[in-house]
Image (tube, rainbow, N blue to C red; front, top):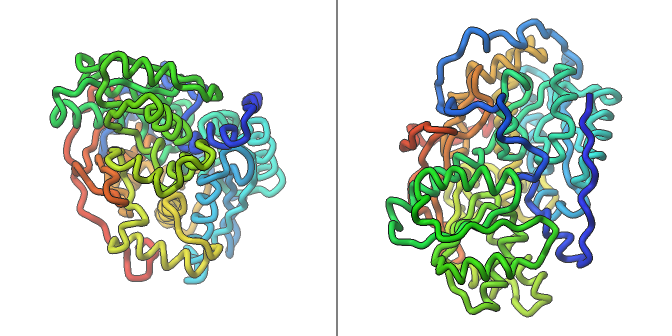
Length: 464
């Protein structure tokens, strides 16, 4: 059964229509339900015990659709065009470039990985159509990198009922971590509550006198993130403001935060609304500090949106200046870290297999996910099938090494992905780390320093 969702309404201003959903793919919308009884609570720690009921859910599925002696066929739905294309359209090409790099070295167990990329224009109805094409016509082995909360929500039931691996959804919604209900689905990036808890803990320790205003998208992204923050600094919050995606006038929200005396805005929103908030605050002569979740802030993208939304009144260069001092959660190295061995590897891969344009942080995200997929295929072994790749991730995923800066939480009872984030700041045109990476899970799981040795890429650039 496929759950279909109607297409979001179109905004009247073209630039804002472009921007309002930019990066909601890795963000959230009303499509996900993070409060269902099936959503795990405090099981989000690496190495959590596996209940006997959780074991063996996919063990009987020996289906090898999409696997031949020479090929593994993967499919993905992505916003290559439409409102969410800026930025996000770079993720799948990054993943494909890495697979092509692996294929040049012989693939995995003699099989080359092909990624069939379908454009869903960030329309949930179209997502259902293209996933039908991928699974029923193209007969892919698995869906990988599926992007977006509302879009992927439209197909998660279908994929699990058909027992098709649904690997590493590009979204931080809690909905992907329901292994009893959705045994074939895995998240990948940190979930929003994990980010919220770590932000709240950082503020409590380092900014105990800050008057905090919450700036939230009015859906799972904002509410899950806020719930995490409130566990630590509820008494410091002077105002909580939600915006409705599609309504581009955020003056009431920013004005309310200003009136409440908030000197630190904590945002769980998408990048277009980061730009709108900064522009609105500037007009109001309001100069708070900002701290955003990872989905809200990419310096290059937000600088461009500032120039776009201001109709050139703020240049991209000036926009970068307005963003100086913004803090953000992070869990992957960024392209400005040219001395980082993972960025060096991915830059090498992109120059060999990319489209000739500069590597972006979105391309890094896609390659990092692809690196995880390759490890999963390796872990499943030469006799890979749809059941044993799920077991392989559950049993081995917590020990996967790669560019991520916190360990995965994967187990039979936990499909949530990366277990933590660090706090960084955009300063002088670069991302500077403020606090080392911390790990946690949902609920009352404590926050602890990430216990992971910094991984370096193997000489081949391919997991070993």
